[in-house]
Image (tube, rainbow, N blue to C red; front, top):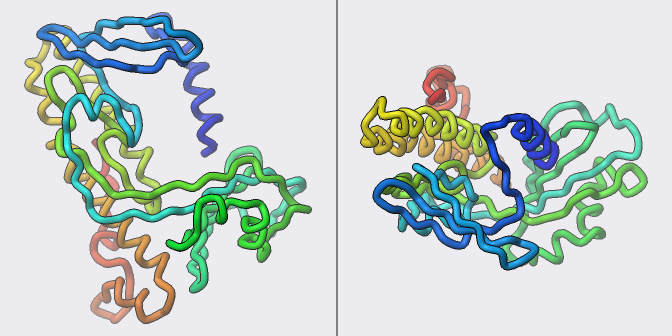
Length: 286
């Protein structure tokens, strides 16, 4: 997917709903839980105008540096993964069917890379960075084209975006306190090698739409909100740990170390082990 395009589509759909108000520019500066509601104070991005909003519940889907997470006061369980991967999005100047219409993981011994096809013929590359390389060095246009020269060059495409992402493996110790909750990256961070980061956020959202609704209408006791972390933590931890193992396999620089990360079945065939061989999609649905 192309994230800016998806965000634009979601905003367009929300604009058609009379029961939804969108405030796209204010910055949240305070979240104050009270006995019967939560007061959220925002400051305008273009001026110092202050807006105070009152809500029965607040869900912080505000990313890895979540403000709501800090108000809840939850610590993080660090599972030990942290790597920098430059991300490059290209706009091809012409069709390149030879590059395929699918995602490819290049497990090269020199520098592992991942290539994706995106909507409207975009191409996205994620490139493994080395510890000694600075963000500025590895995202320079000269270095980017040198990394991709095996497949594509400046005559074939124009860079639309260059950035460095830090992939981490962290899970919030507390997902809910009083009338405040966190979801998506505010609750958990995963390496992207299973493509489950946003999927987990969607599962969080599905879980957190009906529970507060039952509490607001008086159909259920608010203690039901305590189940959010209990229900999702085992699921999140499972795919984060598997994504970490996949990254270890992707980043293995020789055959011996790669095979050491795999498991062997009765016939001697190496794979990522039972966690993937016997994966049941039904267990991943909230």
